[in-house]
Length: 73
Image (tube, rainbow, N blue to C red; front, side, top):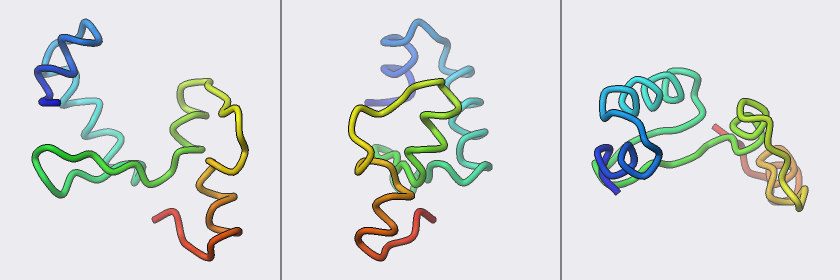
């Protein structure tokens, strides 16, 4: 999805989408190495930011790091 498509889907302007993605990038929560790809580095932090709880704890990046020996960043 393009930023415009994300904005249309969420009812936001492209400027708002760009600002929010920039904030998430500066916090280290996401990266955008390609124009058509957003990589989420810390699902747990993203969920805490939105007030969402994941139904399965193993999806949490902190748990995955412990389980699979990877780092969230």
